Amino acid sequence: MIDFRYHLVSIIAVFLALAVGLAVGSTALTGTAEQALTAAQHRLTGQNHSLTKQNSALQQQVQGDQAFAEANSARLLAGLLPGERVVIVAAPGADSAVTNGLTTALRQAGATVTGQVSLTSAFTTTSGQNEAKLSQLATNLAMTAGIALTAAPAGPVSGQQEAARVLAASLLASGSALTSTGSAGILSGLSSGGFISVDSGSPANAPADLAVLITPADPAPQQSESQVLMAVASELKSAGSATVMAGAVRSIGSGSVISAENSAGNVSTVDNADTEIGQILVVQALKFLLDGKAPAAYGAQPAAAPSPGPTPSAASVPKANSSSPVKAH
Image 1: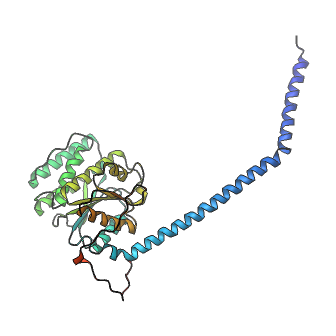
Image 2: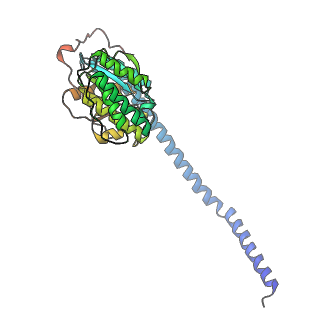
Image 3: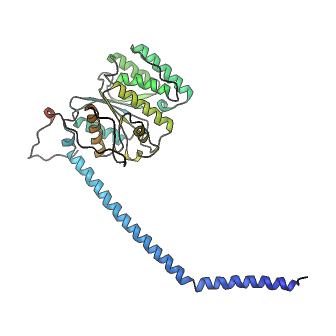
């Protein structure tokens, strides 16, 4: 039998080995480990300084590009959309900087903004009860206005599809032969139901030919909301001559409605419409569509298409006055 003292000596030997290891690690190895950690810290600090400098340079470049676009927007936009009528449709949570900037850019291009209509969160809610309510309302409004409404295929956003079809007919001249009274009735019915609000203008009295759909400012709306907005864009396209979906830079992302629309390729998109450059791109995208070009993605994301300036109508281009500098807006 092994004596108890043997166990005691073994335990003491283990603790002695641990103590020796700790002593060696804290003395002989300290210098080497400390030098390695210090060197790594210096490398990371240098990389951080380099990236900070690079980021600052890129920010200055972006600011310079935006300043150039702002100073020359009148020249870049002049004559692109002379006499065109454009309606702005805003999703819930749309960025006001986008709507305000686009209104200015469209007017600089010679277009008339007939009005701005905002969808409410009730419009984008995809519960079964809400779908049925929207579908019934769309049917009633279409019947009262005297237009034929084809039922949308059964699906998670069929109610919104039918409501968007009626809404598009009330906003765009190409969609139907609605009278101003019929258009006003549709807008009033959707507004009374809490599904839209008419924020500015009189779109019922001045139907548009072109439409701009502004997406939510949040980076990634729910999938159901993206499906609703894509359905709205599709109906606006069918009822008008050209439709562009536009959003702010922070809305770029794999889960955003603009990314989903880019995959579908139904309408053109601009993902930086909260910037001066992006607002110019929205006008150019509308012009491209009017010229017969296929829908494309424009803006800041890597997959965006390049945008050479479209040719304005020669008769509508103002003559440059060399003695008067272009004013920034």
